[in-house]
Length: 273
Image (tube, rainbow, N blue to C red; front, top):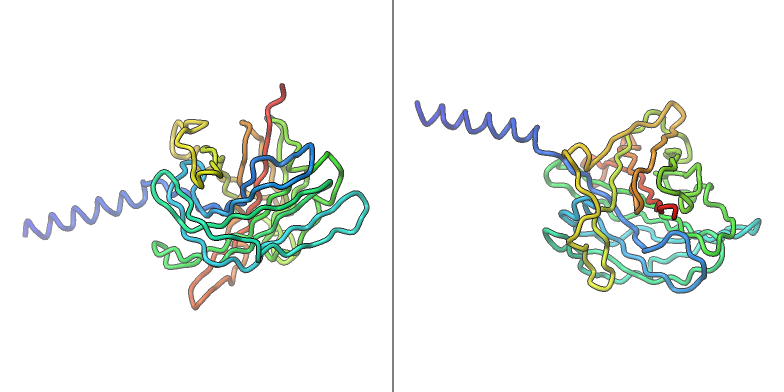
């Protein structure tokens, strides 16, 4: 009888812990050091699926379905270039493990460069479901105007409503959530700060953190879009910020299991000096 009671007690404790242990979010990254460049030239890009605030567990990426860049400059028609064949497999080291990732280089010239990634769906065993995060990052060269505000045709996409590369610390960032080109009202958006600098030469995160969260709720922030699919976020600190709009496809599935099809965008804010 004591054994049965003890077993029940242990199960009850584990159940409580399951609800109290913080759930840190997966974020697909497209990382390059700068979003606003004075001059053109080769820039490095790292594609990593990880937990950016804590530089925590890094998941193995499969072969991406799409990786491309859309370049726009002034009133010229945007041009799209497939970059999938340029990707090189690497191992990326977090503070807890190493995971399969990708890297490449790209020659950026004047104007806007919108990098788009559709990764392979990732199986999250703990949820018995897949995750697929279509991700964007926008790099500008020389301050020349481009079409940063235009969708690039991803099924799941966040379209910025303000330049994502000219944000001072203390500005707000606004975006619109789209699924197959239509706004998603009341979409849930998770937000994380890239708290550990990616060291591209070492293919790893720096151990030092830029900020300390006073409580776990600050690690992963959550907001919701309005009825038009628009969200607003005030930027409290310089650096890279990731926004992930979750579960945009209500019928999302892959290999017979549920698949959360998310949209991610990364922006960089800088301090005014």
